[in-house]
Length: 191
Image 1 (cartoon, one colour):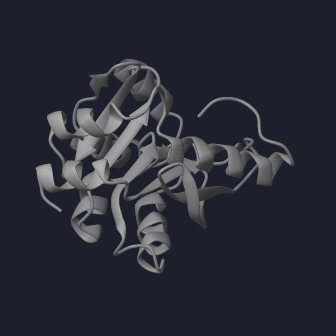
Image 2: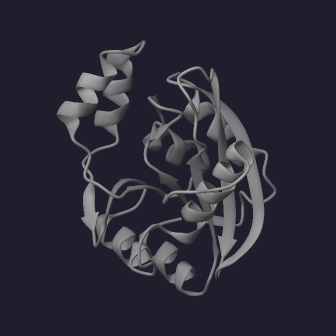
């Protein structure tokens, strides 16, 4: 969907897919990823998949999860809680946009510290490939209290969408709560 059409459609109350990973430990080999389809504050669907902790399959697993969903044609935008799932399993947001045809907005509460990211990546496999995906995601733009990396949507349009929320978009917040509740038995913490 092109630029302004996405924003106009969102004002009418369309489905947003919010995605977040679950809490995990250093001994976990796989991490749960949950997607929540939300419209006007109502949960219309929940999706899930698993990714390798610090692996390289997040883009493919999320694409499979979204593609097999009956909601794909109805979802107008996909929002991620960061471009990293399960530690340093980096989502290629440009590829996800190209393969789904949906705008991708990856939000975080704090501006990414690229020096810290590079340092942490040195401890995991395939650091150069992961860093290349991070660079392809582009800069993190500030939107109020959030920062976001974008694919398939202009900064102004992303700002209009994110401006509908006081903080983390509801679909992402709900994905965070559900993932945490499944893994820990009770959710806690902020998305």
